Image (cartoon, rainbow, N blue to C red; front, side, top):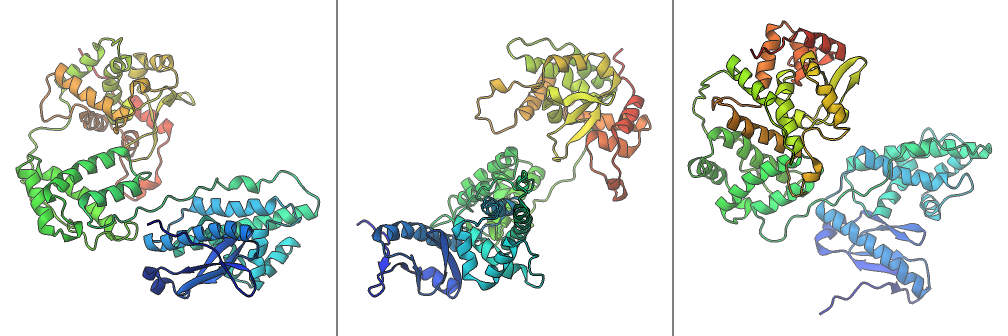
Length: 532
């Protein structure tokens, strides 16, 4: 049977049409006594929520009533949905952008009146109307009026127009943004009164408005581990690196297979601990990896699911505080390259032949080990270099690392030996694009960043080409080696940290920002590698 669509209701005495709907039973107790603003024509109707919601459509014409009812009905449904899924949260940029739409509506009037919808908002509230009149005649806004009294109606009208339900912090943020926008409007209208219509600089400060994405809804019925992870992934889509989602996904696939579709809120700490032991004993994953990767991932996602951002999908976090006991770690050798290993790797890089079918692979083998040896940079930072990242800072040749593990970009001077070997000429010959991978070869299916894929290929190539101790990390070992040689060269620790991208360890060091010149002077002290 098809559902009957809501229709406008006509008052038998006045013949004026209205929206008239029963408040959903699951929301009556929560929303009774609150108000909702619904679009009606060019303005808004402010209605108190009770067992029934009724708002005049302000017309006796059936066709007009039908059009207005459709818009008001859609807004009311968004209002219901917003309170079911929980309020949205606006960023500072979103609040500014939304306030900017109000500024645009006002400033276009150039002192001759504004959109009727805003006139109607003001007409419904005397304090707002007084503030409107003060703005129009270019007077100072009433000093003793609160921000809420002066601008609350405008903020609520913006939210109602977009069908948004936001939390209290977001509304306060929007209120401040609206105040700033309206103060700019005051200045603009004052100029219009003085016949000054020069281009409006204030309009440029507002970003483009884009609605915030809907929060992930709780899956209906039984909630599984997969459901929680899917909701977390949707919420974090624009906040995390793809590799993080990929890494967490492996842990959750293993957990989901172990608990076999059980309701996630029925899981106890014993279940998660049992999975961790299964991961160790049956899947041959080390206890250290389980603690640092699997349990961290599961605990983080479950913690999110118990909070407001996760819409309290879970009552508790059964992974909180869990760890497997680890045996005493035994380090079988130092982490730095030994003298013969340095020579073997750098000689292999010098001897790396061109690869006509995949030139960037050959370039990475030729240059990345040497760049790592003379900078201590992470290999994925080097494999991600663009031609435009190799440049002159004054008269100092530098590399700009824009994508780093810490998310903090840095600039590193090039060692004179690297320059002497022709790296600057190589970088210039490649143009402004990637130096060590070819975007044209990407299929678009890989989640992992191409720079990280290339760094993985380098490890494999080195293992196949050079005999190295299994305990040595062929890529990361250069960071240990560079820092050790920098210590031998008497380079200040704060300078060497800045070059390698290590965070300052003391509060006082965080106030120090080594300059390119300071780093270049330090790099000049770093000795050349002797392959003889």
